[in-house]
Length: 119
Image (cartoon, rainbow, N blue to C red):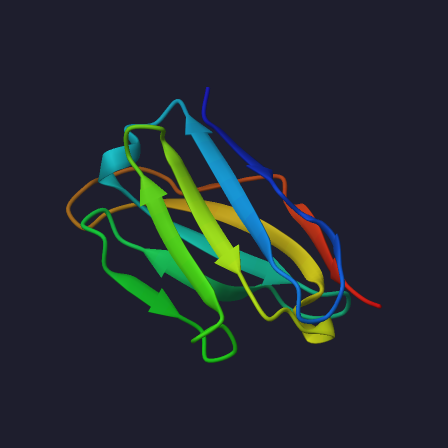
């Protein structure tokens, strides 16, 4: 059974930092591209950052310079370090696992973790 379990969300003041973690089980983590998405109330889910199985990263414009995605294949975990948080970063953050190029199979989603940026 595949599980993606996010953690690390919470309430933080503007300018603060949080580190999200997503622990994967039931997949061969090293052959999956991993991504962090977010969905704010009334808005569509959007990509925040992604990291391929080989370590290449992509960031949304709103995340560049403030967020850093990383992965630890030994721990089957992907991280999202978020700095200089703004109220507009408030959303539910979801972890996604997608088979890397040349690998067949479905993608998976975690249950989400709430991030609230407010004073």
